[in-house]
Amino acid sequence: MTKLIPRPQLRKAVSARQFFMLAYGTVVGVGWLVYPGVWLSTSGPLGAIAGFAGGGVIMLVIALCYAEMAGMFPVSGGEVAYTYEVYGLRLSFLCGWLLAFEYIAVTSWEAISLALIADALFPGVSGPELYSVGGHPVRLGSLLIALGGMVLMTALIYRGMKLAARFQEVLTAVFIASCAVFIIAGIAFGAAANLEPLFHRDQVGSVWPGILAALMTAPFFMAGFDTIPQVMEEKSPGTPMRRAALMMVASIAAGGTFYCLLILSMSMATPWQEAVRLEGLTTAATYESRFDSPLIGRIIVFTGLLGLITTLNPIFIAASRLVFALGRARMIPAGFAAVHPVFGSPGRAVLLVGLIGALGSFLGRGGLSPIVGMAVMCLATVFFFVCLGVLILRVKRPGAPRPFRVPGGVFTAGLGVAGTLFFLAVAVYEPYANSDGFPLEWTLFIGGVLLGLFFWLIAGRVRTGVTEKDRRRLILGED
Picture (tube, rainbow, N blue to C red):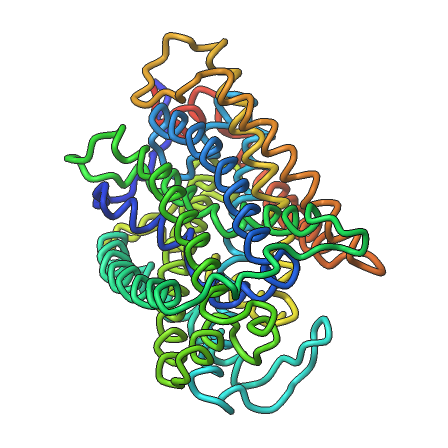
């Protein structure tokens, strides 16, 4: 009798409320502190709201498709399982790796943003310039802060999901309460006249390029819902599968509402064309200017710090679970599927994410925008295959148990496929249109693919030593 390959499993410790906090914290994050100046300057207030609302609707459709898949395959590294079941080994690895690389790149993005927030709270902490990337200086203090943040997050997540989920729950609750105060204040004490003009128009007077620019960023800033599929295997025994899946949809709805209300509040608090010219972090500077209070500005920056941590924590978790799932499936070296005997975490996968994320921190502020563009390319590619997979499985396995079914069935899933193709086309074209040479976004994307190819090649012997029956059990947990 052939001996079965052990299937490592992570501890089950996540409740439905914690699923929501993990996803919502990722959806909202810190982009609202760093990026509103870009949204307003390219789109205008109503253009930015329209772009985010449109992007949010598309993301809701995608989240519904994910909810159906997550209910069918509640395992770590969700997309690895979904795409394996539909397309087979190679495409499963491609999607799993692209998503893992995107998550790791976002940990770098968050670490870099941490340094920017620290500089806003403690001016001068950034220190002397070391070099520049994309015309932006990389400074010693900022680099050390980014690297320190990665080390601390690595240590937290290495110690297990139970601690990380509770940490997320507390910080997200404080973050939501703090944001509600200044968003309500901006609307209550602002003026509708400050919203004029409602749109930013291009040279020929069209508002559509601005709306499209805001819509294009929606997958990056609202994609946090897909952290839930990565940890579905860690669902606590008392949490219904359907409720856990629905938390993805709830996080998108709540996050989209937050972004639209924030843009409205900022644009009413002070004339938005003046706000985009304020120095520093646009959101904090806007409210500080409106209420003539440096203290309010610092409170908002501190709130941004909380948001950054509530994003970095689940993104880091998701990246490590994807690496763990790829290792458990023997698509990359099996050592990355090792589970810590005390903490129950995928220790080696966590350390790999921390290492690559720390290396990305060396890009500095000049890497922020290219990471966004690269991330949208990765996300749109994976989202496309997942949404298409829903349609295929409706045909291949119509009678399979589905704790959650996409409302509208094939029609809604088809909209998801169309929406992801649209996101992908825009994500590939926009960097090219705005670059004089070969876009850095494309370089990062190609670099991620090549890194994945390296891991695929070095695991060739391990991969070929596993039968498809065994691999199915390792990925899906099915005999």
